Length: 75
Image 1 (spheres, rainbow, N blue to C red):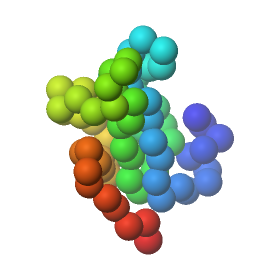
Image 2 (spheres, helix red, strand yellow; image 1 turned 120 degrees about the vertical axis):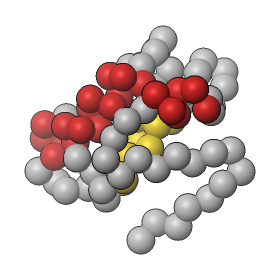
Image 3 (cartoon, rainbow, N blue to C red; image 1 turned 180 degrees about the vertical axis):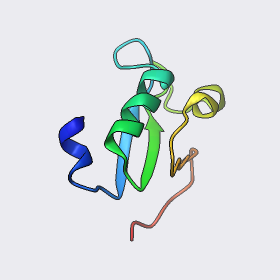
Image 4 (cartoon, rainbow, N blue to C red; image 1 turned 135 degrees about the horizontal axis):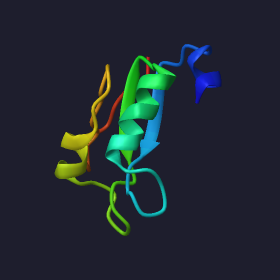
């Protein structure tokens, strides 16, 4: 993660299911370390891609929540 900070990334995606990957608190810590311009939680629950509760628990500068059916355009 420390390596990624020096790359000054625009977008980073952090899995937050807490079972197979880190949870939303750990993902928030990683997002802080990486320091991307936009940080998005993904894979929030096993078998379910999105959870409002998990999204609300993810805290990062530049937090970008993408809900089912939404699209973003990368710049």
